[in-house]
Amino acid sequence: MGLNAVIIPMGDLTPEERALWQEWQRARPQTRSPFFNIGFSDAVAREGSGVAVAKLYEAGRLIGFFPYQRRGGTAYPVGAPMNDYHCVIGDPQIRVALEDVARLLPVKRLSVNSWIGPDNADADERYQRLSTCQAIIGPDGYDAWFENRRSQHNKYFKDKARSRRGMEAAFGPMRVQIEQANHALLDQLISLKRQQYRRTGRHDIFGPEWTRRLLHRLLNGDDGFKASLASLWAGDTLLAMELSLHADGVWHFWFPAYLETGAKYSPGIWLSLETMRLVNPDGYGEFDYGFSGEAYKKYFCDRSEQVVEAIVGAGDWTQLVGHASRRPDLAVSIQRRWAAIEASEPHLGGRVLGTVLAGRGLIGRLARKESSK
Image 1 (cartoon, helix red, strand yellow):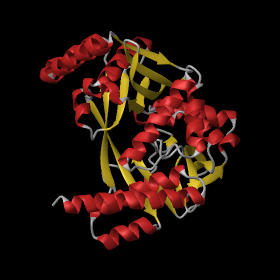
Image 2: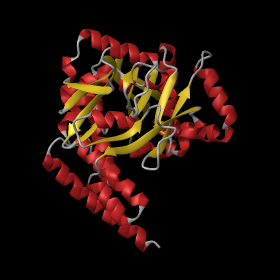
Image 3: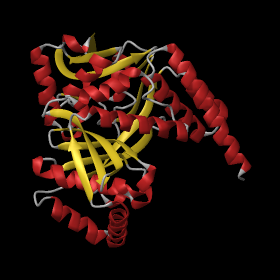
């Protein structure tokens, strides 16, 4: 008997299965991220739609769980497009490849953007290989970690110290607060993110109500798994915020937002550093910065994780457009934009509107690019 799956609602997991999920999740370093915590899937199932769990069996024995959400004929990892890591949460001794999961789900295709798994090293040309990066604070604590980073990148951190002095001269002493239940401040962060999405032409993932409700639910989590909101102030002026997800010693920087007032003073850098300094004594030694594309992250991160982005199964219209364009970069851009729209928008009307707006934005950017040549 080979690999097979039983699909159930998240709420139908038995207490024994939930305990096994948590045991397996904590047993593998690759699944230490808060996105693999059962609390994340629980929260999405309560606020989202189409959420289910594939219980994977081999030779009749339960070997893993894969939580996902269905959008039409496509399966996305639970909480997409806000889920920054995904794979099978399962027996550490058993390999379950991405293609195996896609084959067992009752959908046409599986779309992932940050798959962690044993098949990443030999993923074929259909897949995009990407890297994420992490800062690891050792047993000597934050001060020793920071001194090490500063000695390696002296010029960079001197420049940031100068920015901090300028910020404090302009606004007053800097301070960072970490709060777990300030829902008014969270609404302000969401508003800033929505403005950013409109300004940059990205899909507004906070347009659908369920994504906003999810963040508020996570802010009310328990001490073992929750979201926290860090804010940076200079004097009485708010300059930066970031919502992070954390559990089991891992702190995942998630949704940052900055106010234009103090942008030139690099408030986001100091918000990250001060957050790390404040929570490290509480047992947080791993700080995940997500995808490693932004240049500033190299000054903080000392570890990387390879992930895979792929659509496995029957192709959708974005792949046809990509092939027709004969431009791999355009194909990837279209697929990513559609994935963000489809995963976040549970209703057809939202997907249609999102597609129209994304198309206008893409055409505008291509026209500007051509005119600048």
